[in-house]
Image (cartoon, helix red, strand yellow):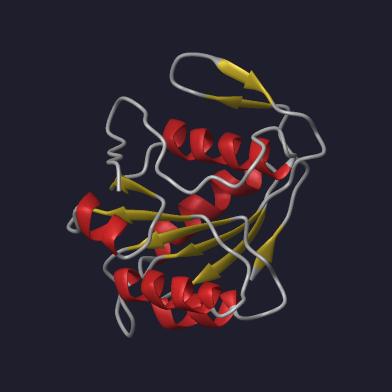
Length: 169
């Protein structure tokens, strides 16, 4: 399922509003076994004007990454049936080594640790429940990267305060 809408003019963080040009739309994959979590994240992303694809488990997410759509961002629940998020991230990274485009993977979990997520190849980690300002912060960074204002591709975790946990690899 893909949901599209015009991009919102502002992305609000906890401390300030950041202006975002109207020409930035991200392709985002949301992989979560909870229908409620998938719906909530899809609505938040839709309100920001992004294209959203949904997966109910890691195997479905992996299949979507091998399709025609190149995802700017993957929000991946770490604990899912069929194929867990940690294994999904490892398989996505292995496919990238084989030539697929690199994806930014953000792990979201109430049970996995940040260290487990980074060891699996994820770029960032958030504890559940994912807060709106956390989502908007990562979206704003991906938009800046997509527009080329960050120069070379980001390869390491970014640091923020609050409940976001990032560690150097």
